[in-house]
Amino acid sequence: GNSVTQMEGPVTLSEEAFLTINCTYTATGYPSLFWYVQYPGEGLQLLLKATKADDKGSNKGFEATYRKETTSFHLEKGSVQVSDSAVYFCALLSGGSYIPTFGRGTSLIVHP
Amino acid sequence: EAQVTQNPRYLITVTGKKLTVTCSQNMNHEYMSWYRQDPGLGLRQIYYSMNVEVTDKGDVPEGYKVSRKEKRNFPLILESPSPNQTSLYFCASRRQGPAYEQYFGPGTRLTVT
Image (cartoon, rainbow over all chains, first blue to last red; front, side):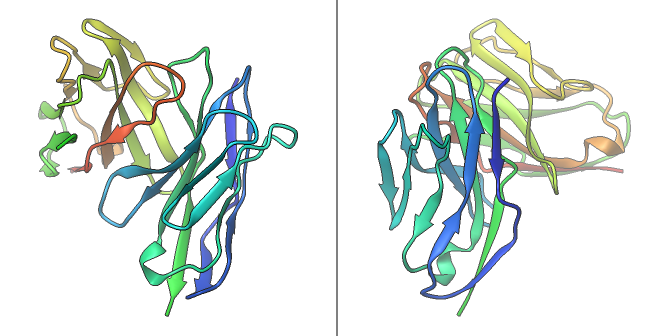
């Protein structure tokens, strides 16, 4: 079956530090890949997505590249802000399934 | 504004007292689902629906019921809540197709005593 593995958190950084949150997956076929963000007290919202190999999704300074050869979709940001403190979820949706698969989430804490 | 709404946002109830959490979306999405979120366990899917009158079990369906009589609404029913159903619940919807993201509601914090 499909699965998504994310690095365990929390990830604690100082403001303006570089961020990487690792995400790897197993899936049948050619899935679409997503990063969602959950700010405190809110529901999840889409951060970025990529629907085919080598695509790069980007939004709000975050980027992730769909790497089929390494089955990865790592999230990066060059300079984090305190307002980026949230839980980040990697997810996939494979072409043959209507059911998304989520990773367990990675908490990011950014200190001033 | 495109959105998924849930009510109530917070609910404290007692064991065995039936309750319903409503979910509504205004985007004409075919697919809707319910999740629960618990510390250390991430998101777990309870039930999903691919269209009106079509529902199916997710990973943790025990103790829950759903219905999909209209495209926009997908209520979650707890016939006899128990303390192990204390959790944060999210409703979500999306268009059919593998490239479409999910839209999530704001969450319902349920406490069963």
